[in-house]
Length: 205
Image (cartoon, rainbow, N blue to C red; front, side, top):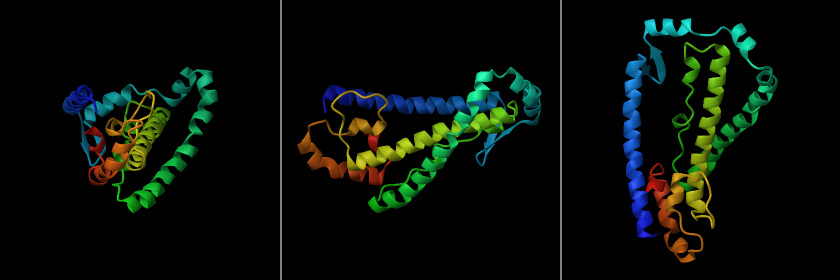
C-alpha cells in the first residue's frame, strides 16, 4: 500500500480513537445535564425530571390530530418492514451459529448494535415510543448485519473493488488491491487469522 495512504489511515485511526473518547466524555456530561443514569442497561431519570418530562408529553389524540394524513396512510407500509427485519434478525443468528462457529470467527454481539432505550423516554407518548423503538431496531439491525457481513467478507474475499464505492466498512481499508493476485495468495490467511483472533479491530490496522 502507498506510504502516503498508510500514513493517512494511521492518522484516521488515531482521530477515530480520540473522537470515541470525546463522545464518551460528552455522553457522561449529558447524563449529568439531563439527570439520568444507566443501571443494568436501563435508563433511570431523577424523579423530578421524570415529572417535568411527563408534563410535556403529547397525548395520543392530540398527536394523531396533528399528524399529516399522508403519514397515517403510509404507516402500515412502514411498519410492515418489521416482518423482513425480523426474518433477517433470526437468519443472522442462525448464520453466525453455524457458519462463524465452523470457521472460528468470533460472533457479533447483537446487543452492541440494537439498543432500544429511547422507547422509555417519559416525554414521548406510546406511539412515539413505538416509533423510536422501530427506528432503533431497524438501524441497529442493519449495522449488526453489516458487521456480520464485513467479517464474512474479510474471511472469504478481502479484495477491494476496481472502482470507488460509497459506504465501505472499516475492514475494507486493509483489503488487497484489485488485481494484486500475488498478495492475495500470500497474505489471505493472515487476514483470516486477524478476523479469527480480533474481529473488532481487524479492519483498523
